[in-house]
Length: 326
Ligand code: ACO
Image (tube, rainbow, N blue to C red; front, top):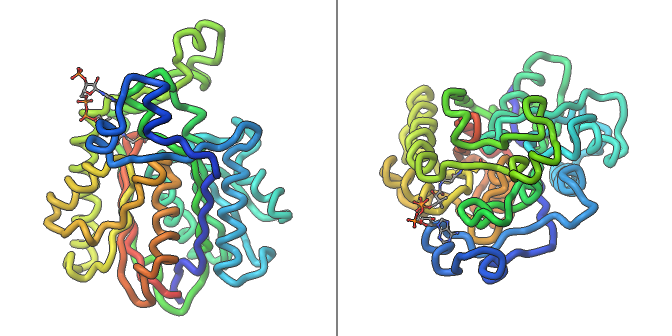
């Protein structure tokens, strides 16, 4: 018995925020954003909608793609750093929107590495023997954590959701996973307030501490190093060469980070799936959206060995080694 991905789906809200729009909001330029990040536009979740709405749409598409009845889903797990609210979990709200009941549903977060962590959690739950199929959904409204007066972060972030149905399969689809984190770097990327340490107050809002803060240039270097390590370690452990991998689905934080990883691994850029120009950084949702697009564009075929790789706040970093079984 193996465990693999049997369906994928993604959803992007229709509102677009272009670099030209950003030029009106902060002191920046289309040219600066494109050359320093590769981003041309990002999607924004409209007012009144939330991560669960994006996650519901992506999940519905994944269920359709897997050609299963939604009632066959045995659990729902949701990776998000932008839940609809502290509680109940966004996974439970997605469950309600899908019209499912009685199955276990919970959120977890590993920031941008969330979906990769999620595939391993799903694999573990199914290996435990109590479940046969699970929904892993990563849904983010990063616009809600974005300070649109801070040009060093606001140009980077966008909203979206991606989902996968993981299930028992004849072949081993999720071959292996590498997961890592280092809490020592918690101050490089974080939202200072809004949690139990600094609850929301008038002062907090005035000081804009409810928005994401980031040390971009330090993170940039760590990102290249840690993503390269996540690829090298999983290949070595599984006795594979980089030539055995047909496509790499990286987290989309910055095109220059992806190029840096490609250079450090000595793997051509053509082997990296890139869609950052359309959506920017959607945290945990980047990898499953890119995976779904790569499949739908015919970049992944049955039998291909592919890699996901990401890094994010925590810091966390991770990779999955996947055999495409569909
Ligand atoms: N437009 C114009 N100028 C800008 C902008 C902007 N949007 N943002 C910053 N600058 C300026 C800076 O103020 C600085 O000016 P100065 O030299 O006068 O001080 C100059 O550009 C260079 O700034 P750097 O920060 O050195 O620029 P860099 O080339 O490093 O690019 C960036 C910045 C894009 C943020 C990059 O560091 C990066 O991508 N870092 C990693 C981000 C990341 O991956 N975050 C983690 C994921 S996010 C998440 O997990 C949710």
